[in-house]
Amino acid sequence: MLTQNEYLTLDATEMANMVKEGKITSDELIEASIHRKKEMNPHLNAVIYDRSERAKEQQYSQGPFSGVPLLLKDLSQSIEGEPMTAGATLMKDYIAREDSYLVRKFRNQGFIFTGYTNTPEFGLKNITEPKLYGPARNPWNTDFSPGGSSGGAAAAVASGIVPVAGASDGGGSIRIPASFTGLFGLKPTRGRVPVGPGIGRQWQGAAIDFALSRTVRDSAALLDEVQVLQQDAAFHWPRYEGAYAEDMYEKFPKPLRIAFSNTSPVGTAVSDDAKKALQKVLTFLEAEGHEVEEVDNGVDGVALMEQYFLMNSGEMSAMRVSLEESLKRSLTPDDVEIETWVLSEAGQAVSAATFTRSLAAWDTATAKMAKLHETYDLYLTPATAYTAPEVGELTHTEEERQQLIRAIEDNKHDPLPVLYDMFLPSLTYSPFSQLANLTGQPAASMPVHISEKGMPIGVQAMAPKGDEHVLLQLARQLEEAGIWFTDPA
Image 1 (tube, rainbow, N blue to C red):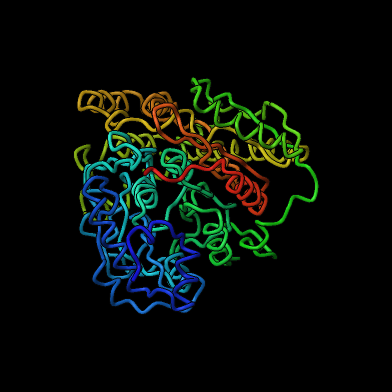
Image 2: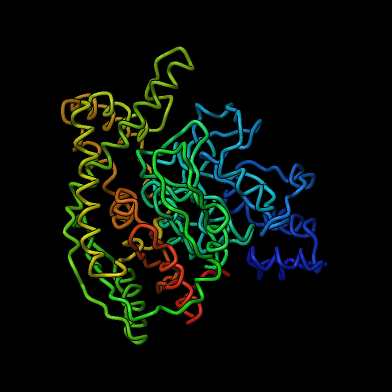
């Protein structure tokens, strides 16, 4: 019989191996996950939809993760006939019409879906505090946020409810929670993971679905199984010809040249904790014989973030039109959270020419990073500028909400300053992650440091497109070296 303590020591790879060997059963794993959820979720609010009873009845496929429990993110990872709210009150009664392609991939790998995790409304924040469900909390200290938008997923994995959980990343939404909760968070190359059905691109290519895990090998094995060359998607990337789960153990054929920066790309402050985390990794890499050099990547971070927010505004405006058509009425500020409203209002005022020029800025940043990688194998920064914020710290007050409603109404001719000011407090915590979303590069947050207050913070590594295997090799070395902190207990 599998004990609760034993369950908490196993990653998904080991769970699946033990099921295959007959040492434990899937039923035991599901019961252990249910027990842990009942113990932890009242404190964390990580899981907002429970399908434990259905999970017990699910016939799992024979795959690399046969019988292993998995939580899905309540945003784009849909199961036919089941709720998919995207953290939005307007969507609370929505029932998904079909499985997402990624969910089909997960199912074919043998995972058993035990529920859905908390996410901010439409995934727009780096915290998880939707009005619909209330805030998710950090297992390391429940006064703090697990981040967002995959905050519920991060809290669930970090607390041991499941060993791995579905997540997505449109501006850092895998890597930010990974940094705040002490997990490994990989954002794959644009086009690596399936999208849809019915969607050829997510956020113009900025967003991608994947997962959060405690161990590097779980993410590596998962990427082996979900990578795809999807002909009906807007973006493609050739399949990796090796095996991530095997190649992560290979040594680098020669010393790496590694660029780094601990300077915020938008000019905001960076904490000593973030700098210490990065220095710890750099010291290790130098001792291993790699060359490290501080560089300026040449990207105008403020200008790039302005274009990122413009993209958000266009996406939210388009979504608002769809919602209004479905509801057969106009939306009001009371229907949605303030970020959704302000972005959708701004998007209605942005011209097609402005939107097109904003996407061109992505291409400029992509070219500059490609130039950097002609010299350097990796680009390292802090994953976040600070450890996790307190719950409620980054949620707008009612007074601030009213001010923002007036501000966007008065400045539709030039909405960018309103958008930037609205997101600046959040951006101050996480200024490093959005670049990889706009360039399409793979990037990973690695849990390498604990602050004096006992909170984790990660280091981010970015690689050229298609080089996830290099990120996995680096992460595996740090994991084996003991520079790895994933246990809030």
